[in-house]
Amino acid sequence: MDKNEHRHAHTKAVLNRLARASGHLNAVRGMVEQGRPCPEVLIQLAAVRSAINKTCEVILKDHLDHCIVDAVSAGDMAALDELNRAVEMLMK
Image (tube, rainbow, N blue to C red; front, side):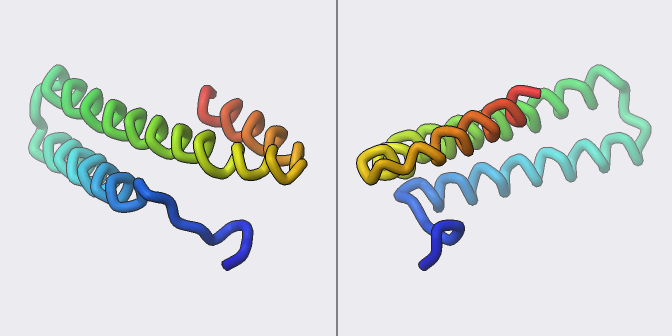
């Protein structure tokens, strides 16, 4: 398994959360197609954003707890630079 291909203990939870976010997003699409009121659409979009944010949180924690700890132990400080870039993109 190479550096870019790995699994963590929370992979199943992440996949479940992504499926939930996808379901919410599909619901939003349907609501827009049906001409549902904007406040209802916005509430559903908030659910999508919340699901994605929670997914990011799980992935970030897993990355810190495993990948970063392992990288720092191995002297791979470039992993911290990669993490910083990823967090910067996430926060935009």
